[in-house]
Length: 85
Picture (cartoon, rainbow, N blue to C red):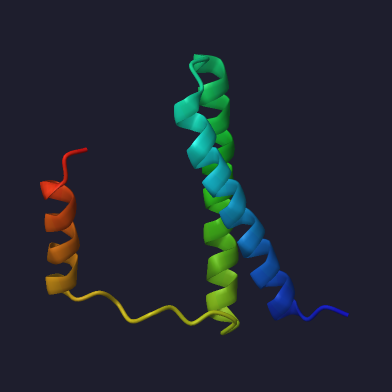
C-alpha cells in the first residue's frame, strides 16, 4: 500500500512531466487555437502543481533547498542577459 508521501511525490513527478511536454508542444504548433488550448492546460497543471507542492510542504513531505542569495540571483540574471537568445 502506498504511503501519502509516495503518492504526492509520484503525482508531482507526473505533473512535472506533463509541464515539460506542454513546454515542448506549445512552441511547435502553428495552430493558434491549439496553442491557446495547450497554454490553458499548462496553466491548470501549474496550478495543480503549486497546490500539491503547498500540501507537501505543510506535511513536511518536501523540504525546499535554501533560498538563493541576492548574489546568486544576480549571477543567473547576468548569465541570461548576456546570452544571445
